[in-house]
Length: 439
Ligand code: SAJ
Image 1 (spheres, rainbow, N blue to C red):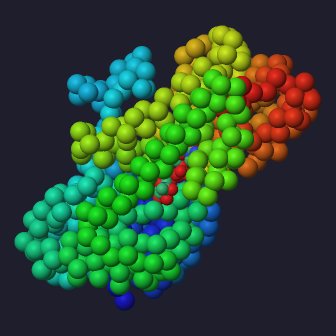
Image 2 (image 1 turned 45 degrees about the vertical axis):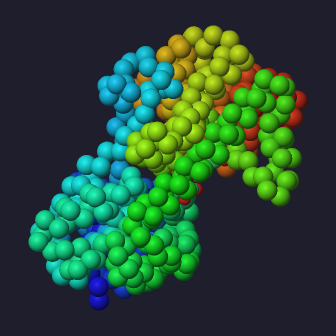
Image 3 (image 1 turned 180 degrees about the horizontal axis):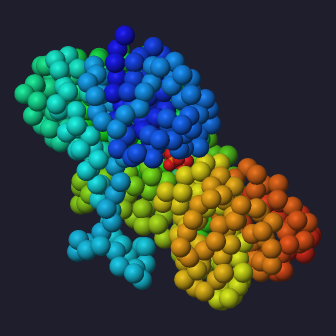
C-alpha cells in the first residue's frame, strides 16, 4: 500500500487526501492551522462543499486518513497549500486607504507557503519518492524553485526521486465530481516523473490523464483561468455598453450566443474567489511587457464593483443614511467562500458612502465584518429597508417573492445585479426594479 503525505488541507488538499484515502492509500493530511486540525479531529470539516463531509468521515473512520501538524515520511508528497497574493502599486508600495481598486496596479504571487511546505519535505525525502506540486504557481516554479529546494536533501530530481506539477482544476461546488471526471494534466520534470504521476492519479481519476512537462502544466492552469477572466471582463464591459445604449444586455447576449462560434459569459458584480481574480496576475508579474490584455481584463473586473456603485447611486440617489438590505456576500452562487468577493467590496463602498447595510448570506450566516451587520434571516435584512440589492445568484434567492419584501421593507427599490428575479412580477407588485446591463 502506498503512503501519501498531503500538505495543506484546504479546498483542494482535503478532498484530494480523502479521495486517496478512500481508494486504498494510507494518507496523512498535514496543516499548520491548529483549528483546522481540531475541526477535522472532532468529525467536522471547515469547508462547505457538497459530499465532502461524508467522504472525509468515511476516510477517517477507515483509519486510512489521519491529520497531523507536521510533515511525515511517505512515498508520495502532494503540495496543495495556498498561493495568496501580495498587493502592490507600481512603485512597490502597499495599497493605501482611499485607493481606488483600479488604481492599485498589480498583485504578486506570495510563494511563501509553497516554499515552506517544500522545505518541510526535505528531511523526509528518500530514493524513488514522488513529489507533486498542485498549488497554482507562476511559470517555472517547479523547475526553478521547488526542485532546488528538494535537492538540498542530497538527492537529485529525475535521478533519485520523481517531481511533477499537476494543477487542480476543479470547480468549487462540484469539487468531488470534477476531481474524478475532469481531465488531469501531469507535467513531469522528465518523462518518468510524469509517468509516476499518472500511476498515482489513475487510482481515482476517470477523465483523461494528459502527460506533459512541468512548465507547460503550470501555463495550462494559468491560461485556463486567464481565459475565463478575460471573457468575463468582456461580458462586464458589454453590460456597461448595454446601459449606455439602452440595450438589455442579458437578452442581447442570449441572441449573440445563438451564433455557433460565440459564447459570451454572464456579467456580474465583478470577479472573486481565490483563482480567477488572482491567477492572471501570475502571468502579468512574470512578463509585464507581454500581457497588456490580461492586465486590462483584471482591471475591468476589479473595477466592476465601482460601476455597480454608480448604478446604485443612479437608482437610489445618495446612499447616505439609507437602509439597504444586501443579499449575497460570497464570491459566487451556492458556495460559502467569501474570498475576494466583489459583493464585500460593494458592501464596504456603500458603508463608506454612509449607507446603513444589513447583509444576508445564507451560506455563511455567521460571517463578521467590522463596518456592517450580517443577519441570519432574510426577513431581518429586509426589515425597514429602503432598498434591496441582490448581488449573488444563489438558487434560493430566485424564489424571493415581492409579497415578502413588501411586508418588511419600507422602500420599493430593488437592484438585481445578477438578473435572477422575475422583474415583471416585482414591477406589478409596485417595485422600482432595475438590473445591471439594461437601461
Ligand atoms: N463569473 C461571472 N460571470 C460568469 C462566470 C463567472 O461574473 O459568467 C464570476 C463568478 O461570479 C465568480 C468568478 O467569476 O466571482 C469566478 O467564478 P467561476 O465559477 O468562473 O470560477 P471559480 O473561481 O469558482 O473556479 C475556477 C475554475 N476555472 C475555470 O473554469 C477555467 C475551476 O475549474 C478552477 O479549478 C478554479 O478556478 C481554480 O481553483 O483555479
